[in-house]
Length: 283
Image (cartoon, rainbow, N blue to C red; front, side, top):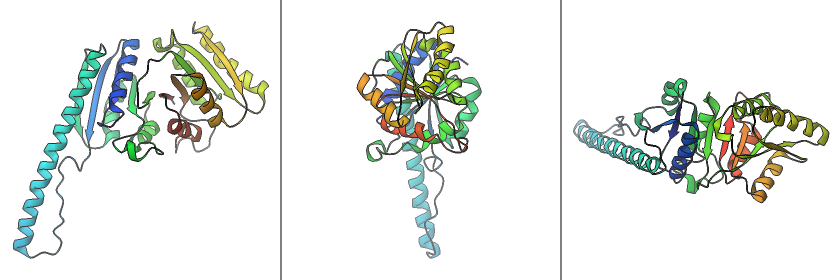
């Protein structure tokens, strides 16, 4: 179980994903599985675009298309190898000598599921290769991974900064309790400055909710303080993150929602999209 699975696509987030992965792996004394998955189209599946051409022209075109498919597949594989080799070099520079490279073809979720029983966490970038053109959207692979993963998912920001100050969004939901439980036994949080934020219109209730998490962390000898505020959770979290220099936001993937098993919780989605720091999600 002492393995971190890092998912890499060659986007602008990939270098940051590697640095964050190295930080986590060192804290956990874990090895790293670095994976790049080629989509089925990248794998060179034949494409028939010949339509109703005559037999001779059709045969020629099919041959040309097959050649192009083969070339695309070779380029995609070469790119995948390059992405993984670059990742291995970055991780080695950060002090992680044990990195297993995995270049796979097919569906990302299927490849992740095949490894999930043997990994402790997943690291991934907030957005994929279209990051510069889709700043208002989450990467589609990220959403799929968060919905299906059984282990914590660390969503890396675009740039890496050392992590020392952590904000935990706590609402008393099942996934938020899992976050506190996992934090209380994780070496990652042993020497970090942790604040637990509870947002509610009733400050007395909010304090009670936050104290629940604080007590659990203190019992595990983890230093933590509570923060109480009112208003919309997204606004309160954004304000604290931007104004007080937090380096990591920890959340349960789902809050109190009847449809939490179908989509990522609305507050979670909003925070991943808007904050410029990494987000660690528990389910």
